[in-house]
Image 1 (cartoon, rainbow, N blue to C red):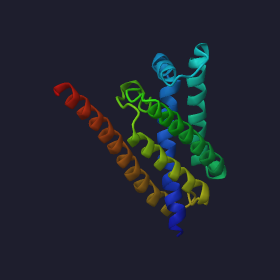
Image 2 (tube, helix red, strand yellow):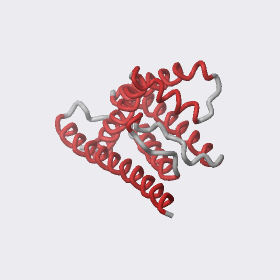
Image 3 (cartoon, rainbow, N blue to C red):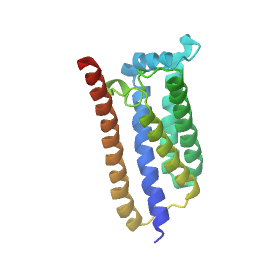
Length: 183
């Protein structure tokens, strides 16, 4: 059994989950005003097209989620994931350089409370690295039962680490905000 392919399958399931959740959030009609505000915060022009922009991003994220999961289209999905995460990383980096540290990142939807930060840049760099791994190791063993049995726990572990890191970032930001209020 090729463990590199098992890890690639795990990475694909992990990225599929992250992208699918992000895409569904953006496609939800209840979240349209939220994402419009996020895109305005990033300084995107054409304010009349921001709802359309968030819908397009959502569709691309959902497409990418399924493309990276399906072995035949994994390379295409990985390229789209690399592009998406790179665009998000660059957009956040530009805002940080401009001093906009209190800008909502838009990462976890309206219920999320993370603002852009160097930690989120690092997180996106890690996501890019995982997508690159899926691109390089595009062989898949999804047809084999043992691969599925091994890939699922690794993907679940990656998701748990991801969710925990997201919460740690949010808690760290809340602590810094509380410390500023107390001082």
